[in-house]
Amino acid sequence: MTAQDSATRPKRIAVSEAAAGTTAPVAATPAPHGSRRTGTVMAALGVTAFSLTFPATAWGLEGIGPWSLVTLRGALSALIAGGCLLALRVPVPHRRHWAGLAVVGAGVVVGFPLLTTLALQTSTTAHAAVVVGLLPLTTAVLSALRTGARPSRMFWVAALAGAAAVIAFTVQQSGGALSAADLYLFGALLICAAGYTEGGRLAREMPGWQVIGWGLMLCLPLNLLGAALALQHESFQLTGHSTAGLLYSAIGSQFLGLVVWYRGMAAIGVPKASQLQLAQPLLTLVWSVFLLGEHLPVAAPLTAAAVLVCIAVTQRARG
Image 1: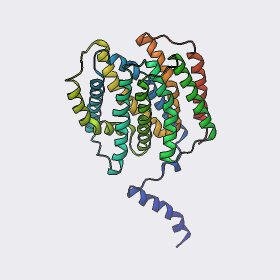
Image 2: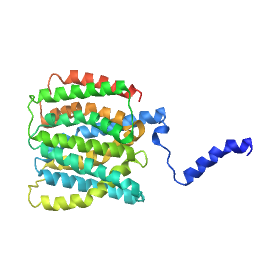
Image 3: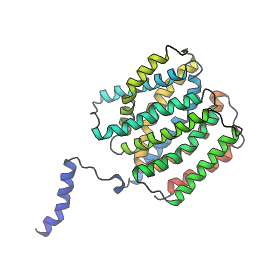
Image 4: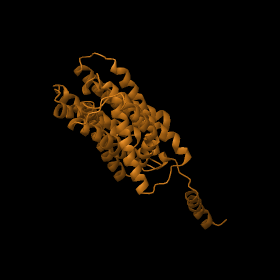
């Protein structure tokens, strides 16, 4: 073998592997700086969209029963996603992806919306925000276990500090009392973190909107059946608030929010993207003041400053 052949052999192997569909480990190729910046923006847009979910759900519950609201929201989102997949002639995912898509569907399409909606029947949006306060840390932990990611010690310190600040704020402003709705909230926390972790992993192998799109389609039969049953036993009144709440939770939160969220996680990694959600409870409280008329506690600006510092540290920490 000549020196020239030796030099060109790795390139030939790389071309052969690419033609065969071989995928290199994601961790081996760091995202470019511009891609990380775009990913951060996408993840931040997702967090902003998610921050309106609880107020929108509260509006929806004014005229629609909880089971009907959740199943209709999932069905509407799936119809939109299915239309996009069909119009763009997106091929069916590979068999190896369906297990992860099932986790995405169970976590973010069915589990989290259902459990938080049930909780919001007896809990305020402020109290429910404790779920979102714990979600970034839980997602980072599950991501480390699932994908082998090992963020730096500084990352974990900042993440724990941010989570502690948010939890202290939400518990304090709810009077420190725990309600029966907490069982729903903590269950939603765990199942959503699993869905985010799997979705972030899959978004490195397919576009983020396809991840949530196929997850929604996978749950469409269940949501259609659930809606048919729930509408027979629950109230259904389309007022201005309930209609807006249903449409936003289906389109803005369940579909568009998750599209940009998974794209952001694919670019900057699940652990770092998840820490942007530390700002979500505070954004939810701001929307609650304007949309629901809830009182914003004096401690909110101080907590916001602490959370923003923690976010900055997690985004700069190496890992």
